[in-house]
Image (cartoon, rainbow, N blue to C red; front, side, top):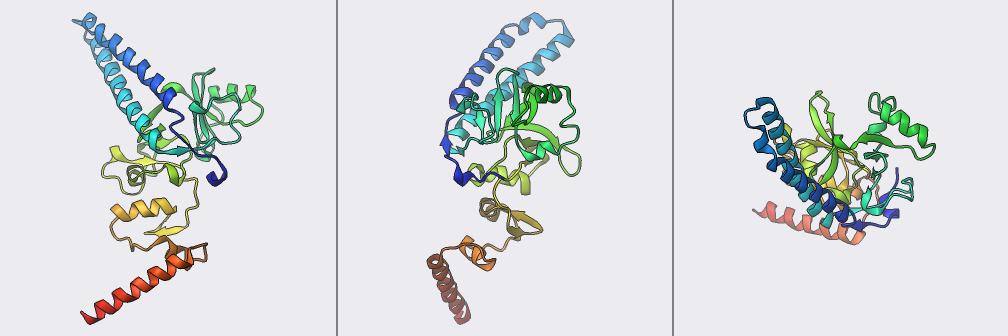
Length: 261
């Protein structure tokens, strides 16, 4: 697993590419709306037009969210991505292949997916790429959710669910993304991803990364909230002795206060 700490983080590098996508969708929406009157009296064509307009409007909303997300979040460039790919086409270990109008990822989850390597587009891609082969998907299958490139997959109960195409490290997570994985309010808000950082904190039968744990403490019931320094010290991981001592001292004061009460 590539550790992001060895990489240079970049903020907002994808914005020019996203803004181009946004303009293309806005133009497509304008054309669809202008030609909508031509479907009057043609029920099937009208229904198809409504569906297309709805899809493009959704794209515009999600790409706009992706632009705002990219302004705040950090990304790195996986060393196995071809040097010919511009930075603005890259989300960690995932990138846009302009030649094929498709997306490619090195996310391990997709290598393990059923029939991932036997699809026609994949076979052709691997034939033409001897090294650094990723899993390729047609452009129309990739959409933005939670500000990230995502593709429809299935959860443990075989229900359709969006899955992040790139691998996500702690610096890229938001409370909404983590909640979508561990405690979604509805199936529509459910969201899955491959965590790039070490999942070592045991919480209610699950193992979380440090950032996942911090967010989970905000919304998951039943969690025993504990400072990261204490958790690290308890399992023999690297921690800040000064902060640890300070925390333990504060806990000692609070215990004495409770006893008096």
